[in-house]
Image (tube, rainbow, N blue to C red; front, top):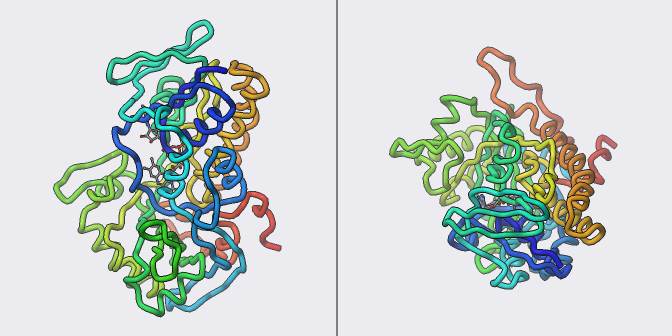
Length: 403
Ligand SMILES: Cc1cc2nc3c(=O)[nH]c(=O)nc-3n(C[C@H](O)[C@H](O)[C@H](O)COP(=O)(O)OP(=O)(O)OC[C@H]3O[C@@H](n4cnc5c(N)ncnc54)[C@H](O)[C@@H]3O)c2cc1C
């Protein structure tokens, strides 16, 4: 049995901690946030690989995991279907996965308000310094501390998130607030809209108290819109009082002026169903899209995992699935080679190429959404069926379209 510290108590950290705990290790999660992360996040597409890791991590995966849809549809600006694809999927939410993984981890293994300041390796262990001055020791350290990882910044200071040139407007809208036409034409599907140079997508997720009953669900949407680096992005990341949040703006801080503008744009460029969703979503928020790739995942007794290692643009719908695959590969390598640098090397050899491949695939799917320099011709129109077949599907389907 080894002592393993996991930095970050979001989905990646909780999956790793639960797997390692079940393998008999002494595990402690160190999460910077002083409060539970419940209540945050939006929709997540599930894949079989993710569901398998959730089960192995001790989460209860049953019919309450999410909302099942049978098909996909691309809606034109007039609201009519342009093309359809029968593709069953289960759509869940970040909050649902967080609840399941927290329930699987005994409270004593989760330290909230435990921000990591620095890590240091020595002989056969790792020491960790917390921001509150506390020092901890371990045999291994797993850095699951996200895109702006403190641990990665110390080990690979040159590796920084690269802004991709577009943002995602996101939100969830109560099903009960929508017109019958919108409910009937949107909720049975994973839906898409493709205005020039932009992309809307959305799907139903569970509503209050995790209800998946028709009438009580919510519609989760993601609308990718170009925004040039510099002044345009800065304006979007500045609240109505003039405060700028360069590393990301909290949902409640997004300026009402930008929300009004995005709703107006929805009315002129998207299918009326999507425009109604935008109008009736209480707090639309926005996230800049980034690329991030680490050239190394194992550093002696420290491993990078999940978004700390690679961030793939959301088009592949694999942020959580990739973190799950990382967590499983790490646990298996430690089970095979012990809590040793050799185990982390095995993990690196397996997951670095996988992370690179997913991130590259995601970059390809997002190409054409980036802001273009003034005077550049618009990106060529995309094949609607191809977008529908390539977005957020299992990796095994990547090369199956065009047929
Ligand atoms: C609150 C929240 C909501 C999200 N919602 C969505 C969503 O709706 N849809 C989606 O696709 N993805 C969402 N994500 C991202 C998604 O969780 C990740 O893409 C994926 O699960 C891999 O995550 P991760 O655990 O590697 O990193 P992250 O989810 O980014 O988690 C990193 C964690 O590390 C903690 N942390 C950071 N620095 C330190 C430090 N120095 N010391 C201790 N702890 C630290 C952070 O507080 C955070 O909890 C969300 C992430 C968070 C944190």
